[in-house]
Length: 306
Image 1 (cartoon, rainbow, N blue to C red):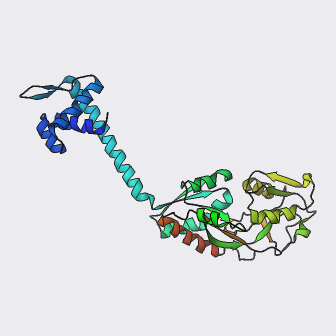
Image 2: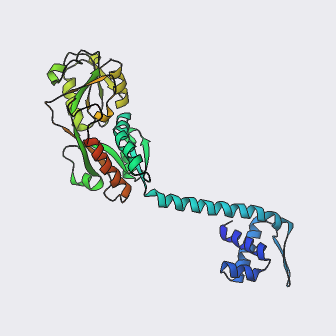
Image 3: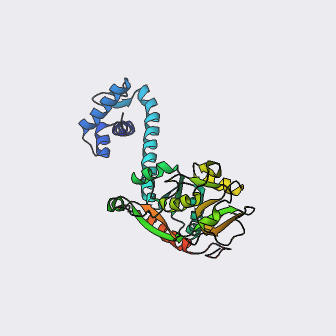
C-alpha cells in the first residue's frame, strides 16, 4: 500500500467519478483505475461498485475512507515535521562531551548563547571517550573538545580541523585539607612523597597532559597511584581527599572546595575544538566564536593566575 493508491481512492470516493478524480490528481483515468485495482487486490475487497453510469462506495469502501484519511494525514504530518526539522537543522550545533569538566567549560558560552542567539539551539551529548571521535568522523556531532596533540600529521589535519580556543596551565588539584593545599606553586619534585595521585590512561588523559602526569607519577609505588577509568572518577577522589591529580585548569570549570596550584615549569596547554573540515553548519562557527570569547575571559571571582 502506498500514498498514491490512497490519494486516488480518496479522490474517487469524494467525486464518485474516475474522470474528475483523475483531473484533480493530474493523472490519466487509466492510471487512477490501475491504482484502485491494485489497492483492492491488496485489501482483498471491492471498494467501489462501478457501472457504465455510476460509481458507488461499497460498505467496505465506506469504512476504508476513515483509515485512508488517517494514513494520509499521518503521512502529511510526517513530511511537515521532517521538513521543519531540515530547515531548523542548521540552527543547531551538536557538541560531544566526554566528562563533566567539559560540560562545565561550556556553561559560560551557553549562558551567553541563550541570550544573544535565541534561535541557535545547542544539543549536548555526554559520550564515552572511545566513541566520541567515531561519532565526529561520521558527522553525527559537530564538534568535540581536544588538546592540540604534538606532531599531528597532514593526513589527520585533512580529516579533522583543530581550532584553538584558549591556552591553559597544568595544575596540581587537591582538596583544601591536603598537605599540598597551602602552596602557591609546585614543581614535580615537590609533589613527590605527598600522598596518592589519581591518574587516567591515554587517550582519556590527553597526550599533552599525560607527559606531565607521568612525571608526577615518577617512581611511586602501586599503593600511591589510583588508576581511574575517567576524569569524573579522578575528580571525585580528589574532592574526597583520597588523592591529588594533575589537570588542565579552566577557571570556569573549577569546583568549590579544591585548590588549583600552578605548575610553572611546564608550558601552557593548547585547548580547542575538533570538527570536520567540510562541516557547513553556520551555527558551528557562531558557537566556536562564542566559546573563544568566553574561554578567554576569567571566570567570575578568579584571575588568570589564581
